[in-house]
Image (cartoon, rainbow, N blue to C red; front, top):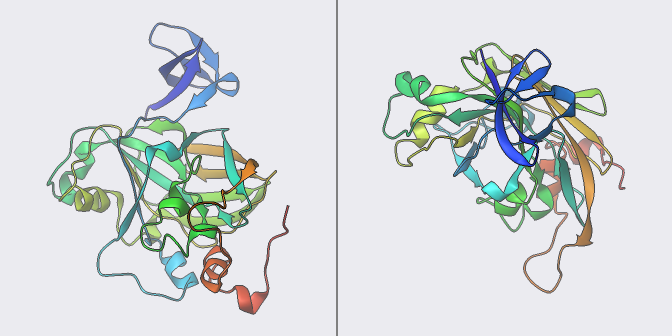
Length: 281
């Protein structure tokens, strides 16, 4: 396996290769991993995410999987990087983490079989598919603002090639405490299936990203929290939550809500029975 990262090096965006604790640029310059300013490890033209895929998540919501995957889109303006700040807009309360594995396309891909998909994947990275559920009532179905608001798609720290996605553990920690833990083996549809499914009608270009779903126990986080997603063999993606400096404009558009659906989704489908509400900060 080889790990590539994109960093700012002397003011320029450079793809580097990780060797132990050093990042090495093509011209030979090096930087320590802990000193690097990270960028998203790829430059997608599109980010496509599957709704439900992990069995534990399905069981948590006491629902059933559809006969085939369903998807939503995150705009590229939502991209964020390792050690980046995730912004919860002022006036919003229900920002949830969702630790995931991201698939990164390596070759233009259209109309392929699942058995061929591995040849079109450059590698994999860690993702946190944050959701701003305050807008769930107004963006039902599209998930545009819920999942596509600025900073809500951290990827990184690196892109790993030749990684076998089978039997890998995914763990999400908030302030060092484990909140999510699952396995890629609990996914109903694996990485190759997802790529082939989307590519039936949508051309995938090099750098494009597919998010493969999250296990159970996505919950809200608060400004000041540090969230880490670790995937076995891919590393640890770390971000911190900050509060936006201005409130959502009230003179245009739908406003944040706190309906039963918002609370139920943000708190795992069982909020009214367990009475769990995060502290408001």
